Image (cartoon, rainbow, N blue to C red):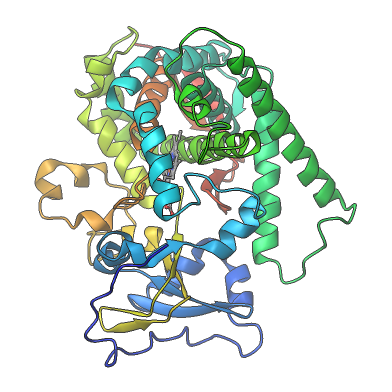
Length: 455
Ligand code: HEM
């Protein structure tokens, strides 16, 4: 693709971004990274707005600055491509998707899929989201303990099936979830491990990886093929994608499965992780829980919520935003610079990988007062006035902003209302919640006891 013609009169005066001072000659930051993976980006971001770090032999830049992020993601976005090295590993070089493509390949995909995420369309998903949430809550009883992290992943998987492909994945969601979990663990291993086992070796990891790919391909192929034989109109993402199968400039069937798969991948664990963190935050902040329950009781009460209710629940939205600020499911994203560039007086080399430190920016005291404190009220209109919008990037911003944000926000609101109308959530005795870093930043160990609400 052609890059933007960059206007960088200061490139010659630009300085090399400083390197982490403890980088080792041979191993780079390998040992520091693995000693505290969950905090490595946060700690590195505190060293400055642009820091060079090295994982094994690969140099990268970490950007922890809202204005620099805006330059990369919006002003000069044509110079910063989705990182081909990472995408090659994730997609095995076999296909492109909305998530991984760039330039014209990306534009036609985004235009094709955008209507499936339109506001009107989201309103039509309301019943499906509520049906799945009620089905989950209907199986619970007071006093039971559940791993709420797992429960949230299953319900969001079911909702992706209903909203994107109009199918009920009951009976398949658990296997599919296992498959995506195995796939991401293996891929993370391949990206970060210094020793690569050849993919053809019959190790347990390779066998599980192949099995997970088979489950995903079989399930999604079945969904695609059943739809191909259906004569009813559906007006959903699956129908939009099918119009491009086997047409010139469109998808092969294999590419179509890849596209469906990346939607399931991008869409379920992210939303589930945020829901998990919200439940955890409520257990740690009883005052916030109390205020939230009061708002839900006074606006919705015990009836089924509607889309109209969602505009009348400002505190619920503050809780969601504050959780996304402290625990963004995508804690960082990366791009590869096409041409050399200068941002904020720092030089970025052509071909260099730049990580945007989303979590670091969202916890930076230049933008946030008491940045590590969970304080939903900071999202009130008065306290939000004048805030740099590039300091809050859970869904990113600019042209590559998450296409699923409206769906995800509606899902989170409706699932939370359905759960909190009936239950409070208490951490089970001995539960130890930890920040788990994979493709998604998620809470692990979320065993919670359900306590029925007496109203
Ligand atoms: C809390 C929930 C979610 C979060 C935090 C989130 C976050 C993000 C982020 C940060 C990106 C940009 C990645 C990059 O370009 O580097 C992204 C892109 C994307 N997300 Fe989400 N996402 C969420 C939910 C969803 C849902 C529900 C769907 C679909 C059903 C979805 C589908 C996508 C797709 C397809 C892209 C690629 C868009 C493009 O490049 O044009 N996401 N998401």
